[in-house]
Image (tube, rainbow, N blue to C red; front, side, top):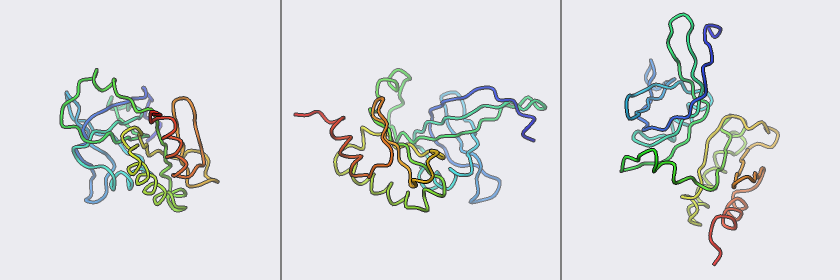
Length: 187
């Protein structure tokens, strides 16, 4: 069945998460996203489904990165996600210009593959979130839950990106210290 699809392009869509869609209750393959003009369904990779089920809340703003594919027999376009980033809740509808003004200065990429979660990734994530909240850095950092980061021997994997610099294999308290030094004004 995969040979009937032609890759069209990659996409980056931001919208309001409406919920999950699946044929059987409790099992889903798609998420539903509300855009300004329409509602769309995007297929979710298996490795992200469980995590997204626990973390996404209907009404939350999310950004979805993925690939659009064309079914050569039916002419139907299928959207498949490879990364989903929660942006939080927004009470005011933003215009595209307002959305582009605020970009966080730092990102933390967290592997959600089973090897990393089994080796303590979930507990490190909660520890990291607590430290960032305690130090007042949670609004300046975007935590992105990704697929494999290609360094499975060092699981659990975090990558901290501050501007053009990238740090790997560091502890949550060290991440917070690096963020404080580079993001908070010294004064």
